Length: 41
Image (cartoon, rainbow, N blue to C red):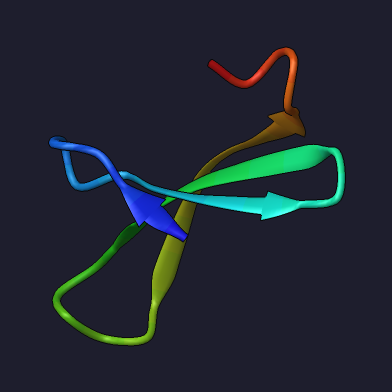
């Protein structure tokens, strides 16, 4: 799990990436995009 400057976290799950943001410092995660690694950026 890594973050960029916009606060978007990237999770790698196999060949897929999940881009997410934490909401209000809780364990709630809003998934912004889920897709194949070659298409997600």
